[in-house]
Length: 246
View 1 (tube, rainbow, N blue to C red):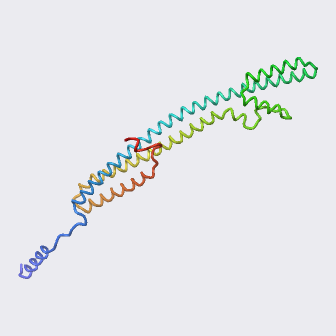
View 2 (cartoon, one colour):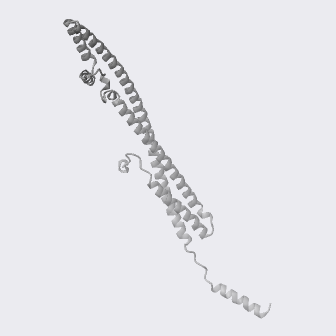
View 3 (cartoon, helix red, strand yellow):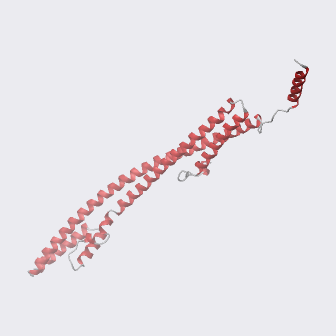
């Protein structure tokens, strides 16, 4: 080797010794500290999402049960109302027949028969007619044309009012249960994302290169922030109060 080549090699060695190693934009110690912090935060958020999701599931089961009970009660009331309509129609037909008999007796001048028939009609109305039905009969009798009490506006619907109310309440609870089911499924999705974040933060240590570790860490943090924002948009369970648990 010539003297010039030796001098060049010595110069390169001196330059390499004088060069300071490049510092990373984040130290390994700081990165490990951040990983530990976000592992704790993610674990807490995972536990929170799991708990709220289970509360939604509990509300769903409760609403479905109440809805079924109200639906059964509403259907029972509907059947009772139908039977009441049939019975009142039969009563009205009986009153109509007696009224026709009274008309015939009156046309013959048989006042005694008329009085007897009217007494029967009065007894029938007293024993078989509710206040609403009796008022509808009075309305029908006051009309110039022959009409039925059941033609009075809103009278027929009044039989089914309580049943319709129960069935409407049942439908409302069913819809709330379906919404609770949807919210619970959404919280489960958030929990899965948080589990993915925990996985990514857990495997950061297998990368020897600090920049590679940081890239995986950033991906995990982005997923964590996105899932947290999404979780905050999901409604809390109906009637939820954190203070009630303390």
